[in-house]
Length: 367
Image (cartoon, rainbow, N blue to C red; front, side, top):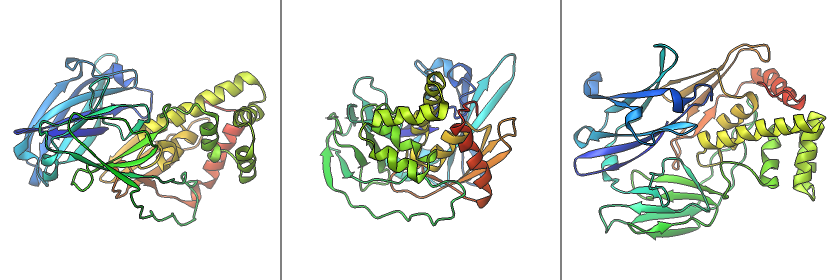
């Protein structure tokens, strides 16, 4: 789940988007209702309601579901927590649900503005846009401007899950530029990089600006970068020094597949996962470079995901293609995003990792 919000004189409106990480449940077809409640101190229920997905126009597309709910302003305070259950209905009466939560904070009440897509009018929920996107700052308070800082920085792709190298400590980065945006202004971010919106407020939010095709990767140079997870250092050096990046990408996959049809299938599967990782796991850096993005690309969609407190656990059930594997990610403090999770790395992953990579290198895609 990803979300944004805006406060009005008597309530707070939450705009929610849900995606199915497993890509098996056809969320846009199966999602039936959203039940939610607000619990206060000592688990007291302060609010309880249900919203039917079908009642919300344009609630879904082929990948996800978008919804909005309203919470009275009086209960948007700590330590209150907004809990969600998104229900999916299958053949017959079978139903399953996924759980989510939002910690309600008094700082939320100060955010009366909302960034919306200039073309569709839909709220900007995800943490990325492209250089070709246009946004409008909506705010009933015409005197309230939005301060924006611009950062130009590069972040390294995730280390393998068994790596024992110390994690690079986050650098203190300084803004290179700033701008002020007034209500009803239409904005296009022409420079790629990381932006901090509403800088200096409790609801400051990071926004990653990528090339026009993001979250897809279509340019040859972009297709080279995610191969870091499948190649040796010698292979990478050769790939990145190639005078013709497109030919280098094609040659790599053809050498893996042995014939063109399988090469096309491998490319479609691998870069499809890159795209999905970008949609789901973009934080202060592209989704494919994050720990969850790396695991998703190499192992595929997990069989099960569980969330407890600030921990997210992915389970890959035992199959003919791979043994039972469990990955645990912990949420980390980040000034730009709430979507930053780090993998708890273990030496024991080495055999599993190299086995999964070897399957890719053998042209096996049904993982």
